[in-house]
Length: 342
Image (cartoon, rainbow, N blue to C red; front, side, top):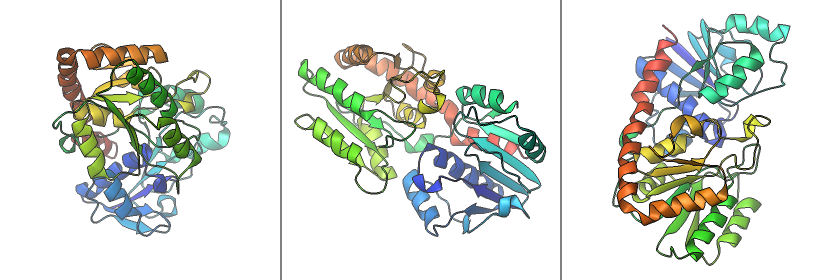
């Protein structure tokens, strides 16, 4: 059996690429010969290092020929609907698309060759189903639960997100300002670490963050290895995210978090998430139960101070986050993905 995998963004090593790589791994473990399309012959090594996955046996090819000659093709869409030729074809949308002429006659014809359409959250599903007039299937992204464990905790707030000001800005600048206000108000035994992938070379945005953070216990760590990120999760107590801040998700849904995979990674290591109230975040956190959602910077600051002041409450919620993260295990994901091709 042969499986073909395609993503137009594979070299960005982001959440969508982790999703696609997990699909490749699931097919490989099922016994498929898996080919991934890429012009980078070392992409498998890069994916394995970034996501901490064993990807031995997965091949890199110049073209999967849109699935021609394969038993299964899994294709990550850039908003367009491809013509696919495998025996079974799965189209994946990782983010909301709208106003892309999704209901066109040509697209409707292409969907005849697509067996399943998969999305990463109910938030994404709402937009995709409306735009393309389909009924997509939600398969939440996977987390390698066993690889994210609580360690000796420190007074550390962590954010894990791509350093980018592209279409979906993670707004690390908001987190820097919020932490500075908290620190200046007397919480001087805490520190903030911002880590994640960045575009090729040091970006102007990262330079600005470093400049703004000067004089405070704020550390910017670019392109960390999987092992380094896992260590930060183990040591941190609180997970912050401002992704989507200042955006009206009903107008620009593509600019808010479509799911929030790093939030769940943090939860599995016992971090208490305090995350922006938009997009897929609302499917992960029930505010006051397994974390907190915030809409104003003042709320982020106030909630964080409460957690930093109340170690007992912080510990109680931490226990809930670890339990709730279990629903996003890789084994659950693998079973749901493989069920699509039965």
